[in-house]
Length: 204
Image 1 (cartoon, helix red, strand yellow):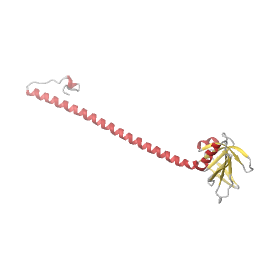
Image 2: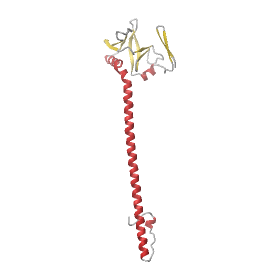
Image 3: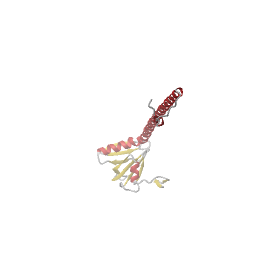
Image 4: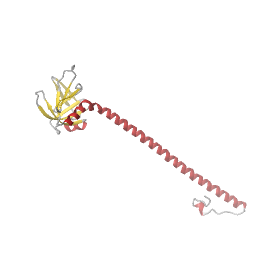
């Protein structure tokens, strides 16, 4: 997909970008919900807002909108302040003279949550993903070590069983050899019993 962003007399075309419908942005975002935005004419309009890490805030006419109403690049908007009851101001440092944005939440709890997301949580996402990957890697290594230990135990048990079978077979051969020798000494002969033919011995 390709879309064009225009600011003043400058346009920027972004290629190979996924479509930023409200639904897609919501799945990508760290926070989403309704806020009332104040425009440059000082009037308030209800907007569906999505905070997408790391530095973009999308706002839509509604949750099912196909196109964003606007996108705020938050790279320089490092000042997040609750300036009135349930109203958040996004502003830049004094040496970066850009307009401020105002958003009003529907409750004190939502206001606090949005302020926290704008001020901190958008920076935590990559750290969280890194930590999750490290936890996954550690768990994989633990499981691999456990699998290797189990395989070694199975190999040791199989070797022990083979050793026991070999010992029984050797004992059986010694008994047969002794009986044959006794028969030769006595000038007689011995018949191999059904025990030995069956693979067992009355002497075991």
